[in-house]
Length: 168
Image 1: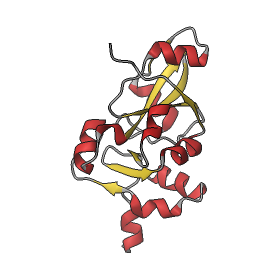
Image 2 (image 1 turned 90 degrees about the vertical axis):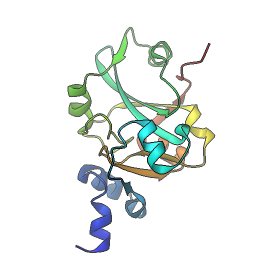
Image 3 (image 1 turned 90 degrees about the horizontal axis):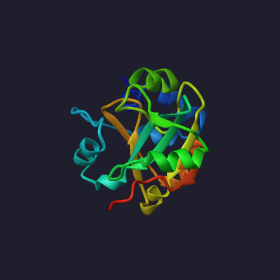
Image 4 (image 1 turned 60 degrees about the horizontal axis):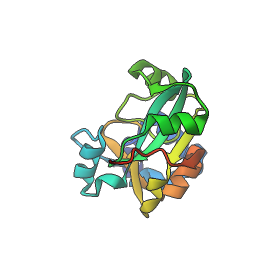
């Protein structure tokens, strides 16, 4: 196996294919794979040695039964009422694991911000723009990649919103 092929195995094959289709081939060598899981934002931040807020969580919700992807910084929680308002939906709930896999093609803990099986509406919280670089899942619970937040949001087809839960 060549060094390039070895690097490519850090990403889920569907994600690697999406990266190539987007013309982001230079991203593949920057994907980092860890021996321990990085399925939570805290695990990823610990493995990378970065701030929790520098992790980009890709979370699937169901808005009136329709899947929607919310990109949120790792130190924050999503306010479902704000998502509901942003989408004009009657009801927003966390998606079940089977809906996440069916919609994205990835398991919870490895969902990347783009490269999904199905096209979904994407909301991106403005808090991601507080950083020069954020880290997001590369399709597995063991791999992450770095990207400028604005670029990541653009490739995900995201709309900037304020859906972060505010502390009391």
